Length: 226
Image 1 (tube, rainbow, N blue to C red):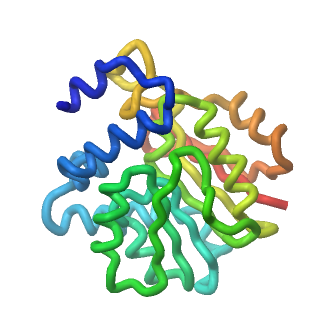
Image 2: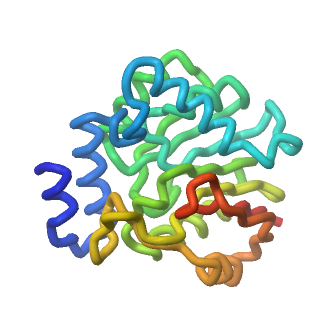
């Protein structure tokens, strides 16, 4: 199935199976391209991971420690995980696509402190509770076609974080040019401040900040577990 056919196909009833199917196919076709469509060749791909790791950690630099346990949600093949592995004592990544996870384990084979997990597409099942100091997600929730899936991730991240742990993630806030009439596994749902307020009502998160990214269609959210 081509990318166009994937985008035009009727969505399955099981949204997580839909995400796994499409992202497993993308990972098998050309993982680096679908992770970074503009910088997927040669060293450009790896170096883009270094730059984006710096951006993701931005605004948090004064609170970071080398002994932190870090989790990346939607890690792909480990483009940023390799740099997190240099900075932090224990690093975990989780992804819904088996093809991405398989490639990540090969890509990161030399990093003994980096661990990659196959997830169910909406939770952190299998990962311990009250364990992580920092959770991150970059350019992942923008591809999620169902807002409840993002809500489930936010809720389970609360479980996985230790007290005072931070969760920083990027969300899509408005439709993209050329987007179809319904969200799909490429052009996901838009997230509003009302959605953030809803997450705050479900668990006792503290909203540390919410600010625009360099892309006017996206914004950063930083939550902290009490």
